Length: 259
Length: 332
Image (cartoon, rainbow over all chains, first blue to last red; front, side):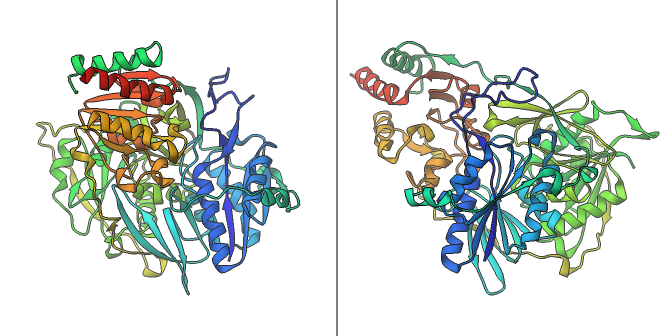
């Protein structure tokens, strides 16, 4: 099975996020980045499918120079090769624009399966996989926890809401967006990290994938980034851990009467 | 026809709550768009996918919906992304709406991005507010920031609204009945590429957190499975049930049936103590109905503090033991 995994580099969860001076995005200097969590689960599913059925795992990612580090991490975990799409102005593209880049890089590979995480941790649009499927004319399924290869295609386990699931059968090639938690994530081994250095990373530019005369004007634009308004007035209990803890017990006992 | 289409989902034969919220969002949107386009008044029409036309004209009419279109086709009885995309695409081609409003459900997330892309559009997903312009607000960075989005161009603007973001209006005294019609799309069985099975329940749920009065809930801040006993001890000292956010259960540090949030259980205890939980929306929807919410987190900007009554900004590995000690000494 030839599997492509679309991965995204996102700000690390523990990074301090500040709005940039223009108020249209976040301050990116000195920011720590990491592999988007549900993409890590998509990569894990791909690696396990390859271990069971053989084949190849290719990671694809688009963004500025810094995404090379995240791509190396994916190669260190076991992906065979990578396609890195150089694009410095990702923010000028809407979800359709990003999906066009990814789809254009994937199409010549003729994969049996395309996987990606269900949602990114930064923009949280949750659309890339579904739009890629539409652009490539492939069937898709979302929120997938488990993938099984069958004689005619795939049987997948889809997560619904409130503890409900559903099985779906679909033919290959197909696109799946992967929900976190279906597998246990692996760590890169020292040997993996060493091997990753020699693995093939093909560099493509956004301009050669989608010629500028075909680059549509974005339909949807992020015009302003703000701090969310507070929904409740939170009483912050300060002081040392001991003081704050004692104050909290007092509040819960005598103000809220929940203890 | 220029107007706003609202996609309605049914649950057990009735209009789901989030669909009523989508109707409220469509009504709010009316206030921010031109009253008429090319001389045609802006109206709100609802799309219901139902095997038979239910008695929704009165309910939706009283909520300010002008028309109800029943999407009817045997191939729509069971949801598939292919079927819904084809059907709604045809309806949009025939109606030429200015806006299409969806409830942001797992089903909508599955097909609406493809539907929008097919028409050269982009869905503005998970909208929490709308304003003059119109500008659509959605959350970024797991709820740490808000982003304001605009749509441009001629095609319809697609938005989906987050559960709970718009208040579903109570049926008012209006006796207006939405005019109903049936739209039968052309769908061929060969165009449906996926075969969905019947929904099933996961592992039998043994713990009912929904009836718990006190809940201690733990998130990623606990860092390691080895540290779980720290919060277990706090739960024991309080006589509370132990619960968790999704990543803890994904990692197998606590069983899945202790998960609170959109994919787990919805709880509303007297006290919800959130420890090391940042408060992504998927978690908040499962616990924000709690009577009293306490958050302990090292990040003062964590979204959990937006819904908390009391907060302690600090290291949980210092605060939790201090809290256990304070509880023990207060009991004497």
